[in-house]
Image (cartoon, rainbow, N blue to C red; front, side, top):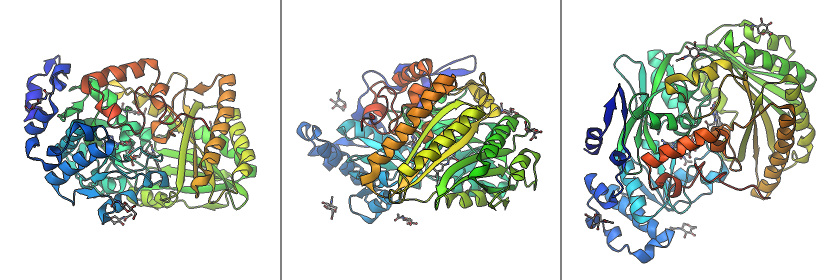
Length: 539
Ligand SMILES: Cc1cc2nc3c(=O)[nH]c(=O)nc-3n(C[C@H](O)[C@H](O)[C@H](O)COP(=O)(O)OP(=O)(O)OC[C@H]3O[C@@H](n4cnc5c(N)ncnc54)[C@H](O)[C@@H]3O)c2cc1C
Ligand SMILES: *[C@@H]1O[C@H](CO)[C@@H](O)[C@H](O)[C@H]1NC(C)=O
Ligand SMILES: *[C@@H]1O[C@H](CO)[C@@H](O)[C@H](O)[C@H]1NC(C)=O
Ligand SMILES: *[C@@H]1O[C@H](CO)[C@@H](O)[C@H](O)[C@H]1NC(C)=O
Ligand SMILES: *[C@@H]1O[C@H](CO)[C@@H](O)[C@H](O)[C@H]1NC(C)=O
Ligand SMILES: *[C@@H]1O[C@H](CO)[C@@H](O)[C@H](O)[C@H]1NC(C)=O
């Protein structure tokens, strides 16, 4: 009903439908009336009757009212209180331990989009903060769970539906990539999605999304037909290249700043059987591995079926490089990987796999429940520099390798020319990347360890490493300010890395779709438009 009245107020000109700010959220928007239009009779909710301005001044009072209201409306299966089995199931199932430690006031599991609208408006009415979780793979505290607030878990909104001609899959945010690929495989189809099974659709698409198929079609955010979004006023709108194109652009890189996405309508792709696996090399071959890595990045323009990343790490005192080499067709010996195959390997797990088998296989490399940090930077692709960075990384490993459970890894990936060119699809995205300076080299640290008492030691080590690397990249004139949101640490500001013009455009769009800043202040976790990094580095 509300979506209908919105579209009555939209202006359609030359095939593009733009919203007026007033149609999205009038300046006199009344939250109580918004809830009533969604069928919620505010005056009949007991938890709100006893709710007073005095309680509103404490988060606990506000969240007692918000969670109490949700429980009154939807029951304890959908609204889980602290210490309940369902609540513990939520907090125990994040990828990183840092997110598992967060204790929300309640966990809310919406089953349809209007329930998401109601949760956002109850947060506004009471002042209780919220966070939203899809796969829960973001590593740092509070990214997708709200300490003392409402953690919205999309788990039960998990439909995957194909449209009539099977060109678009409509995917709800409770899915991970295993459930998406499993649903589409019987049709011989897939979408641009994650490379490990448990990564959520929700965060992955809004921050970027590097897939096995990205040299053919681009990143996930450049393969979205439309998003269904719950705005700050609880409106349910659909944003595409032609309808609300400003919101559509902003969601392609803008993360959780514009609304809660309740459907990701993604273009489908054909999905033949694949071939790939990890080929592992000892340190004496590192410079040859780096040379092969660079040639494969450059050759993405010649053969888009290949995908690679290379991890450098130490295992049982031995430095190794492990190259994950994937081909999205069952070809035994593709030319593009020949150079890698000419380097002697100590192990090679290459085999023929379906996409479902591939993501299940890769999942085993990324266990749950450790303390974790991901921390990326970007530079222009440069062979000498790539060697220098790995040498520096290996030389610093002894400083941290004896911490309990320490597993520091640096990973090399290319943001290739075909990926960059696809970033102009459908009106472009917010990332601020372009192909003018050639491929971008995405480097990230992935580090897991056991004890919280070592957190600061790890953070300081990574920070100091990147400080040296960035200084050298700046000297060489190859530093790129871009920070990949999906890997970004809490000490980074990916929105600033998109460039001043894109940041300003994102802010202006947020002012239309969320004029009072609900997604900035009531949902404070993860990367915000104005706040800089979630945590200021000062150790
Ligand atoms: C083991 C592992 C493998 C990975 N592999 C890849 C890979 O192959 N390619 C790649 O590009 N990246 C990869 N990543 C990074 C991954 O893309 C990010 O961690 C991403 O944020 C995960 O999304 P999620 O939904 O699981 O995370 P969540 O923690 O659930 O969400 C991340 C952020 O997005 C927000 N969000 C989630 N759903 C919604 C929604 N519906 N509406 C609005 N906001 C929402 C959350 O509130 C949160 O702020 C990997 C990460 C890990 C840990
Ligand atoms: C919002 O609407 C309710 C119900 O109509 C009314 O009681 C309340 O005073 C309004 N609030 C504001 C701030 O106008
Ligand atoms: C949950 O359990 C912990 C530990 O037993 C306890 O300290 C806490 O008060 C409990 N919380 C609630 C809301 O029952
Ligand atoms: C949570 O519940 C699901 C389904 O009931 C179960 O498969 C899973 O193992 C549980 N996870 C945790 C961490 O308790
Ligand atoms: C890839 O790059 C190398 C080195 O530049 C080149 O010799 C090779 O022919 C290229 N083509 C393919 C398809 O791999
Ligand atoms: C994406 O890039 C590839 C490779 O450059 C190109 O063939 C394809 O047409 C692009 N896709 C779109 C939708 O532009």
